[in-house]
Length: 111
Length: 113
Image (cartoon, rainbow over all chains, first blue to last red):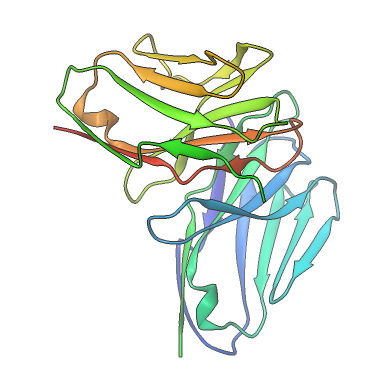
């Protein structure tokens, strides 16, 4: 059974600071997705990582994938309050299309 | 931008009753999914649907659950006899190809009393 673990689960940070969220998974996969969820809302796709060494950047967020280490990171640069949300990584096994989600990282950016 | 739409946004149902959750996926998408999220927990896969049949299902998706695509646009999830533990947010998602990001609807909050 595929396991996906994120850490930290809760992250409180000050505006302007940098931090990294980690996503580890237990099986061979080269397809990983990052989603953002605001309270009571749906999931918004942020990044698609489809190969080893893939790196994607959008604004203050950068995601990377190391399939050998079975690890993805979501790096936040110079955080702003608008980034406050829950961030989920989701892994897709090569044998199908279902997504297995991590527990989510609840990010709070304080002024 | 096209989006996945779900109705109703909130459904309150007595335990033991049947409930149908409705979704209209993005029109040129071929793969359809249902996920659920119990309050404060992670998102869990229920079922995927492609080419008019179930392609994968999880252990959560037991005989009480069924999915249908009754016409060219709607995709429904039916729970035959609801239990208290079915209370959750149910998300529908769709994608054009299996290795593209899945687009999620706003969800239906299901409350079982």
